[in-house]
Every structure is written in C-alpha cells, then in structure tokens.
Length: 451
Image (cartoon, rainbow, N blue to C red):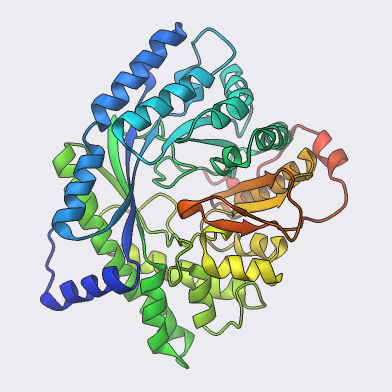
C-alpha cells in the first residue's frame, strides 16, 4: 500500500499525538507454538522459551526504533501464542503452571509488556488438555506477572458450554483468593477471534501463519476533540466526523504495522480499529458519548450513542487499512476509562447498563470489580448472560470480572498503570445456583445454520 500524505495531514497527526492522546496502543507478534509439543514437559517448556526468544527477540527494539523515527507513541509491545491447551495436549502431567512460568520468563527476556495465549477453546466441550489448563489457571496467574489467559466458552455455531461457564465461575473465584490481579489477566469469551492484538484476550489462532504482526490503534481523545466542533449538528454530521477521524487514526496504525512487518521480516496481519481508553483525562470513550449530548455516560441514550460510535469507527477505519481484524470497535473497560470510573462511582453506570452497551460495541463486561464475597455461581451467571449476547448476535463478547477480597460496594481498587482503578460495583441479589447446576449446552440459535 502506498501512502500519499500531505503537510496538512502531518501537522494534524502531530497535534493528535501531542494534545489528544493519539497512540498505537500495541504491536503484538503472534507466534505458532504447535511445533513445540511433546510428551516431556521440560523439553516442551524449553522449546517454547527458545522459539519465543528467537522470534520476538527484536520486537521491542523495533517498536522503539519506529516510535523514535516516526514520532508515533507505541505504548505496548506484546506477544500472543498458540492456545497452550493445544500445545501441551501431549505433555505428561496434570499441571500446566510450568508452561505459564516459561511464558513469563520468555516475556521478561524479550522485554514485552504482556504475553497472551495461556488459553483453552472449549465452546462445544472439553478436551482433557482444556481441563488441565483451566484447573492450572489460579496458580499460573498468581505466580506470573506478564501471562494473560483466556477461555472461549461459547460461539454462535456451537452454542454455550454451560459446564465451562460453571467451571470458570469457580476458577475466577479461586483465582481471586490468591490476589485480584490474577483475575485482571483472565477473560472468558464467546466467539473469540484468532487475531486479537489486545490483552488479556490475545492468542495466536490455528489459522494464522507461523508468525504475524497485528497492531491495535487507539484514539478516543482524537475523536472527542473532533466532535467538539459538531455541537448542535445532526447525527449524520456526528457519524461522518467520526468516520473521517477513524480513517486518519487507522492510517497511522497501518503505517506502523507495515513498517514493523518489513523490519522484522514477519507478515502483516491486521489493524484492530478499537478505541481503547486509558485512565488519563481526555482519553475516554465515555467522554465521547457525553460530547454527543448525554449528561453522563450510563444514562438513557448511552446505548444508542455507543452504537453510532462503534459503527462509524468501523466504517471509517476499514477504508484506511489493507487488512482490518481483531475486535475493531469501542472498548468499555470500566477501570481504564476516567469517564466510566466517574459514572460508576456515582451510580449512573451500573452492571445492567454495561450489559446493554455490550450488545452494540466491542467485547463485553471488561474490568468489572465486584465484592469479594460474590459467589462462584453468580460469576458464572454473569458470564452466561454475556455469552448469550455474543452467541445470538454473532459477535465477540467477553467477561473480565474481578472479585476483590475484603472489598464491598462503595470501596475502590487500584490496579495500577493502564489498568487504572475501579469502584466495587454491586451485582443483583438472588441465587443462580440451580440454573448453573443444570450443566450441558445451550443450543446454538437457528440463524447459525447458514450453509
């Protein structure tokens, strides 16, 4: 792809970077680890470590070089790997925590921020390896710093594996007993995608090449700045303004992705168009919705505003990149968005409204802190609700819910860095235990039969 950029565009981009928090949120290298499989756990770990270090040894340096030469902030450099439940399936032993520790060592050696792919895909049922990995999650996540994990429990084609939903409620609860940060690195999906560059849900899918570069761009502050000039204008103008802004943001991401691909000698995969907020003031998805005319994010009208934003971002971004993928839309992680933190603290943004918002945006209930005494079946029921939205609407949904031991509604928790802080949010009373105990599989919807 050729780039014809005039001086005006260059000056606009400089202003976006310096004043409006524009950045490339992540360069993520995906690495196939299937050739590291074997019966001996130690040998498997050794091969995993060696391959990651060999493939991603120059990833961080390359990202920093591009950042310095182009003047474009690249916030994170990350790695995603083949789901470990596939890689480790032939290993002897019940515990996959040694592999998690190996991934953590490799991440630290290469200098990346996170490594994703300690994952299992069990939307239609469990393999023995899936179960071993899931049971290893509490230990694996509590004993590592940089390892992220995900489990896919449902899909539009397969339905929802309610046995997996029930198990993940118990696993999240057990993980939280060892420290809440483990839960911040664990996400439960429906319709997980294979080329997601964002954590904690990134993994390198089996349909991906040997290695690949995927880039996630971000720019809520840029969109918010552009919309301030649209006060009183119709929604047609608002949508068009977002589309034009998303095009500019994505062009920058495409440039970085192509350059990283060339320098590393690794195929370019996709640009993920997602607007990913940070706790910084002026870098908020909630602020965009409020600029559209809402008094506070979470009030009536929020879902409609978010639907417009999500659609316009996709329409604008898709024209600016040769390959768009990942999740591509607007993220609503409560702890990572200053506007959402404020709305949640005052009670305007509640779990029910967040669930409604997930019907029209990227992913789902993200970075939700809940009381430490929340029971496992309630967590499972939250996962089931979100998975149902994904299954029926043929979209990716997810839950990253964090029971914080010793905390209750009215308290707050600080995760640090880009993960931000969050108020402890209330969940509904009333047991879902009998519902969750049924087990089995919720069948796929009729419209899944598209062949």
